[in-house]
Length: 172
Length: 289
Image (tube, rainbow over the protein chains, first blue to last red):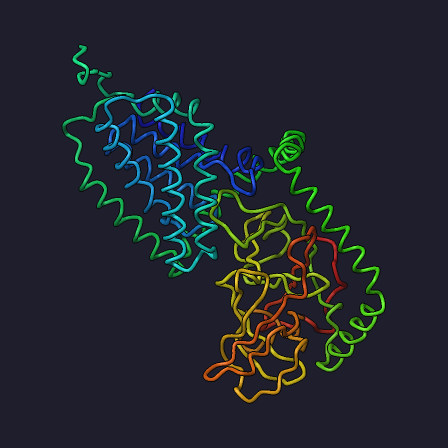
């Protein structure tokens, strides 16, 4: 399977899951941001360019299923994927805990940014407190499901890329 | 983790994607129909899957709600118990209110209960975490619904249809800060433009005369005319007359309909230019075609 087809498969599965199963399982009215997670993890594993492109399409799909104007999330997700990719290059050591915290922060930032853009365009009607609460809760919920999604996205995003060479610790 | 390829140029790509997203966003906000059709098509493709998942996940959802929604359920139960006690104690007041409503509706020359409507069931909030003050209902274009139609309960205005797919629609609630509706004060006959406040009330932001004689608890209905919604739908009652305003009066209205405990809604099957309250209309809550 070609890398593009893998990414497409992951995006289609993610949109189906986010629009169905995950929409049913909400905590305090907030659900998992699966497409945002896919965007962030693609940036992490696939590099900035592949991450940005995948994030753009993830954003478009997200806009469609949540009923936001087309392009709103597509505007927010790619910079986030590139930022996460850049962060990955600067991290010396990554543990499951730091990874989880990074996902939480990235998803909360993405959710918050999308809300701010939505507010700027006069689409959202939330108070800043509600923004923050929703962003943090979405970050926590998404971080909880990040481990299995991470494996799938790594499989999809690293296709065709050179394997991991851990040169930072001097190990070949 | 894979190292980024040396040929990667994230900055131009990012700029290109941002420009594309911004263009799409601008086109969509300006009302480009193909973009709406694309989104609606995607949601329609997902719809059968969503219906199956809705049914299949009912037991899981029940268990989930049992774990995470227990406190909400208890609070809701307590709220309903208090509400029941309040209603029992207010039977006399209710009778008087009912009489007042009938009298007010008679004054404006309409029979609100004879409006031709489609009954819809509330499914919940739209997918994702983006929509606030919005709910999803189980009817769409297949049932003759279209964007902009008024959504009401027996108590009055709830909102209007914002997005209509084949078999689902999204309702923007009247409390949304971007919800605008033309309203008329029944006693003083002043008209103005009301906006949701995000907190269960609406505020009339423009149109009210500074010297208008507005009474506390005065009934407010939709004004029709150039407004998106049909005229004479009960909206609520005045809870702040803002009589000491020096520049512009901001009258606050408490919504009649209780948006917290909704299960079924009525969609009024007529745009303002139609005849929402006409004699030729069908019975209230007619079954779907």
